[in-house]
Structure formats: C-alpha cells, structure tokens
Length: 261
Image 1 (spheres, rainbow, N blue to C red):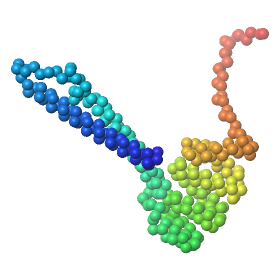
Image 2: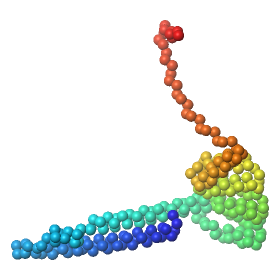
Image 3: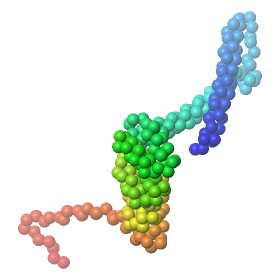
Image 4: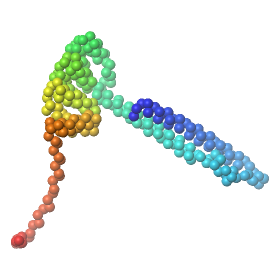
C-alpha cells in the first residue's frame, strides 16, 4: 500500500473515530440528563409528557447504537491498520538483523564508510580489502559481500569474480526475498557476460523450487516459460501420478485350484 493512501486512511479513520466518539458522548450525556430530570418529578403531582412516543427520533438514546457501532468500526480499522504497519516494521527489523548480523550494525559503519571513501577515490581494490576484513569480522553482514560483488562487476569489470562473490552469498542463510534477488542477479551474470546458460537455467529452476513464494521465483518462472516457448530448453516434465496400490491377490485355501477358463 502506498504511503499517501495509508496516510489518508489514517486521517479518515481518526476523524471518523473522533466524530463518532464525540456524538456518542454528547447523546449519552443528554440521555442521562433526561432520565435524571424524570426521576426528580413527583409522579403524584405531575404527569410528564411521553416525548419518546411523540417524537422517538428526537430521543437522545435513539442513535446511540449507530454512533457506538461507528466508533467501534473506526477504532477497529485504525487498530488493524496500525497492527499491519507494526508487523511490517518488526519484520523489516528482523530481516535486517538476520541479514546484517547480530552486532546491530547498520550499513554506515566506520569500516564501510572508509571503504566507500576509498571507492570514491577510485581505489577499488583497497575498498574491497577493507570490506573483506569487515566481512571476516562480521560474517553475517552479507550486504558487505554484495557490495564487493558490485565493485567487481561494475568498477573492475570482472564478472567472474563478481559471480564467485554472489555464489558465496547464496550459501548463507538469508531472508527468502533477498536470497532470490541475489540469485536473479547471478543468473544475469551467468546468462550474459559469462555465457554460461546451463548454470543460469539450473539456478532459475532452483529459485522456483526452493523459493517459490517470492517475487524472484515469479520472475524465474516467467524466464523459464520464455525459454521453453523459444525451444531453448525442453518443457518441464509433467508430474508423475501417484502409484496405485494394488489389492492383494485372493488366496485359495489349500487343496483348491483356480477355475480354468
């Protein structure tokens, strides 16, 4: 959901909850005041008019149910929206913890910044050296390994070294989406500059088989279907039907033979 749409929903639900709450409180106070006035009358001396029968819609409690329902629905919508955002936030934090390591480091660590400074000055090998030392100290900070692969590919024009870095990344336990997109990038290297289509096809099939619920797997399936339609790879074999269990043969008692046809 886009942030602008989400913001509008928050505003509308908050305004709705405030309006329903204010109207509910006002009507409830009016109803309580009316009941209090009725109790103070001496029924032996005064016979108060029955306003509820004359004009039931004007009774303060007439719309309490509607207002209360609107308030509950508005608060429920706010709660669901906030719960969704909170779950996404927690998921992202957990993903970053898993992806970047247990040390709680962010991408902008001193070592990483120093490596980026060397990279900005054109000292690509020195940047890789600093990043690799940082990766050895923090082996789960795989964003560093991906940065090394990027420098090899784009700045040093060494797709083979970049592919080796991606292969090492894929050996790590990463969140499914990150693993999938790193694998797709490696597929592009295999299929393009390295001219290794067999490895690319094998990796596409692995993405589909092991990470089938990810967006990367959807891209992999699309690419595999395209290769099949072009006749580059054979169609995937149809799944074999489950084996049919045969019922055990009926055994005749001793001394009896099967009837001859």
